[in-house]
Length: 202
Ligand code: ATP
Image 1 (cartoon, rainbow, N blue to C red):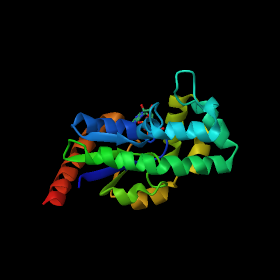
Image 2: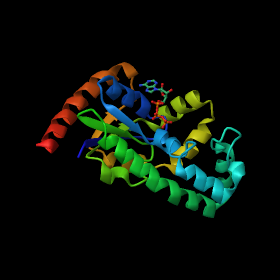
Image 3: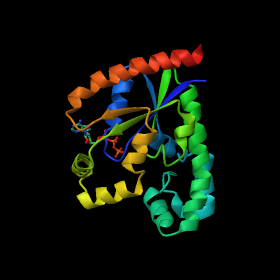
């Protein structure tokens, strides 16, 4: 089976920035957030199940999911949230694994903010963590998302803690410095992963 590198890190740590550098080297990316949207696209069985369970108001006029309404519903209703998680988590996982196995590159990258939280460490061969000082993380994220530093800190508190993430990491990319340093670090890691992927095949 395909050699899979997991890429994770806290909110605004630089996962997307790092992932795009692997894509520049021809590596296929599977992004958990993208897959999570794909499984509820019009025509997908999960969307029909959601509309049947919560009502047709969960669909917009064009047949797509009314995300704000669904978010509001599960925010205020724990049972609704667990029903939705039980429906979507296995589908997302299955779809991610399918896309990873079908990747046309020597290894594939699974990019997931909640990789550790969602128990995906078991499906990856190596875990790459993007690490950043919390102060820098809060600053960059609040600038990017135009939200308060308190809001970013609250999201960080709901995610896996930095020490735990670093303990599980096989490789760590520090992203405190200028982004100009990243391409060289990614090229080095790419060589490591190519070698490990070849070993797995042998
Ligand atoms: P999220 O989990 O929220 O999706 P992420 O981990 O994918 O975030 P990015 O979007 O890659 O993080 O980076 C967060 C912000 O910081 C972006 O605005 C990005 O352009 C910027 N950024 C990333 N790396 C650096 C760097 N080394 N120096 C300065 N800014 C950076």
